[in-house]
Picture 1 (cartoon, helix red, strand yellow):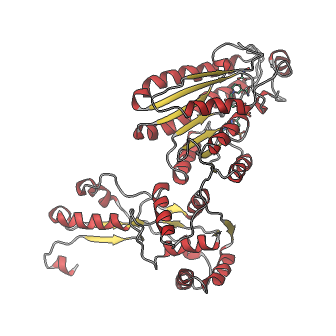
Picture 2 (cartoon, rainbow, N blue to C red; picture 1 turned 45 degrees about the vertical axis):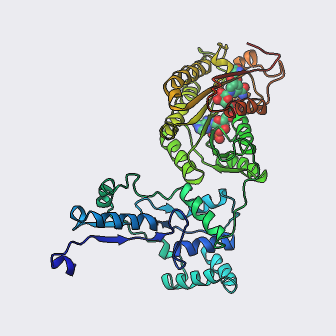
Picture 3 (cartoon, protein in one colour; picture 1 turned 45 degrees about the horizontal axis):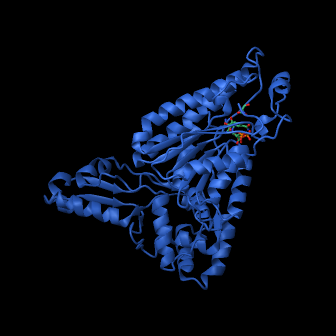
Length: 447
Ligand SMILES: NC(=O)C1=CN([C@@H]2O[C@H](COP(=O)(O)OP(=O)(O)OC[C@H]3O[C@@H](n4cnc5c(N)ncnc54)[C@H](OP(=O)(O)O)[C@@H]3O)[C@@H](O)[C@H]2O)C=CC1
Ligand SMILES: N[C@@H](C=O)C(=O)O
């Protein structure tokens, strides 16, 4: 300020937490974020903490400073806050570490400190972490972590294009965290992650599967994970998703639960954001969430017809619209929509369901025409009857219609895995091949 008062050009930089650079993760060894990472991964424990953490890769900070100095006349007199405008929650970071191959146990903060004290004798960074925590939170409590100051970064954001930094402020996302953890592990500063050993043709791809808590969606999620995909599991029942996730983890795969009701745009968008933070951008979207109620059009069960349209039509559009910008941006992606043989032919007792699947067909075909030239593929899968809970007759449905028209007990139905194999075939094709439709039915019941 004195220099400014004497007429010298001054730019003020207010720095938040500085993290390692994005190439090598060269990082101040006494930084709290790094020490916390070490504390979590060395102890194998994730303390319950209400902490929103922000950090900025140090190479970004130095780029801003050097470039702004080169344009002094443009930026003199400005204050640049280099404080990450998009902090992430510590919970999300721990979830990310878990899906990235670290086994973590959730514990209370106080219990974690006890564990750290035991590790501190043999591990210098843990001793440093304990010292820092005593300084920041002398009473041993976790209150310190609840405080996060946010700063107005508008001035910096506005200046970034003129500084040649059009890609904006570095987001704390999966790809950045992956570089950090890998580089730090190479240098022995963090333990190495357990790798996804399932291998397979889809290794490195990210898939989002709706309806993953049951039936076809569950089988597809498992098959994709076996083939190397990291899978985001979407449905409403969090407990069911957790079971599916545990099964995938036990088979050495990678999966994360993203509970959401597809009829809510906001919940779908939050699920996509969680997938991006924890696994990365989705390469594949499988829309399997759906409902089917045997009801004749004149039965007056309007709540079931509304629900069918909401889930099968609106829900599917919500997920497609949430991932489309990401896929278009990257110039690639594969959307697989569960239609039905009822998307090709009418079925009595299922007028609204048939209509919903004709919608899926029409929507998918038009979508394909719009996005094919931009690198995206759209596949409609049309299964005949599959042995899943969808085929059951709900108490409030039209039981006579179910008795008369359902295929149950009349022939051998497909298994969910039969449909999963068809989907795997479609997504494993080379990028120039579009498998646009697959009709897969019970041999005994062709339409
Ligand atoms: N089974 C069959 O014979 C056939 C099925 N299909 C289609 O395949 C798809 C999957 O069916 P299937 O696996 O058999 O059925 P299931 O009943 O086994 O599974 C349906 C899935 O959809 C999810 N779901 C339902 N409503 C919502 C919602 N509002 N938000 C988020 N998820 C929801 C359910 O999860 P949760 O309850 O946890 O939310 C569940 O995971 C459907 O689109 C169906 O139309 C096509 C042809 C034949
Ligand atoms: N096979 C279809 C209709 O009966 C379906 O289950 O989607």
